[in-house]
Amino acid sequence: MKKFLFAGMGGQGILSMGRFWTESGLIEGKEVSYLPAYGPEMRGGTANCAVIISRTPIASPLCTKPDVLIAMNAPSLHRFAKNVVPNGLILINGNLSDGFSGRDDMRSLVLMANDLAHEAGDVRSANMVMTGALCALTGAVSERSILACLHEKFAAKPNLIGINEKAFRLGLAAADEGLKK
Image (tube, rainbow, N blue to C red):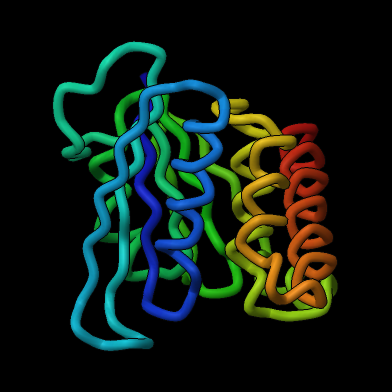
């Protein structure tokens, strides 16, 4: 069982990341839970969602101690980093974070997700950069499942498929490169 917490602000695609992860788990026949939490604002307010993926039944969707934190901004990083389990992982959007001193009992990787998303063609695809990195780092769901979800979500907007797929692949590559350092 792996527990993921996606956190950031409204408009960053936090809930979409969680949905991609959840739907990918379903495609693979895994047990999943998805628990979103967000403020009343459309953009700029807090947003997070907990996703649990397991091969066995999940007793509760609550995720107070995630194995993995995906922090898309500094407030989310500072709020949730202390809750990550020992030997856990924090994936950080370095474009919107003021740094993280880390913990000795866990791994962390800083990606310039906004820069990579801009390279892919749209800064709004930073969530797909992080999704790609997360896929590479955890292997909890497959690339194929994520890409199937991406194609389904953007079927009505085919111009966004290429941008988001490129962002996803840039995230995969950035995570692989980050692990080599």
